[in-house]
Length: 173
Image (tube, rainbow, N blue to C red; front, top):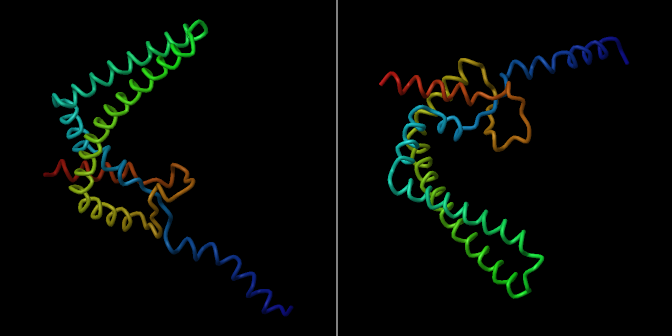
């Protein structure tokens, strides 16, 4: 290999990492977490959790869970001395209680998810503005949604910065 070719190859190998760095850094963000951790979101979720319907559903969940736990304990304790029919009846009661519990959990989750979805839509434009600002000021060349990444060290995450900027924007108004 000629000296010129070797030199060119060496320069190229040494320059490649610098070229990648010049493009900007890589960052990861969890937009849903960033939004839901804002002061506005926390206040809104607390308002929903303090509504009578939500409290009633939560109390129903606690009651059903307690009943279910007691039924499981009793079944585990008595299963050895129960007949097949008694075991089948106990399993049926447990399955019914489990279905009731899942229904109540679904109602609670649906209420919280609806509120979260409304917040995501409401704050969407502000998030885009905040992201543009952070991308520019930090020189980010590649921004990935956290859900699309298998692994990212915490140092790559800008989620907390997005939350802080959203809180600052809300405080100015």
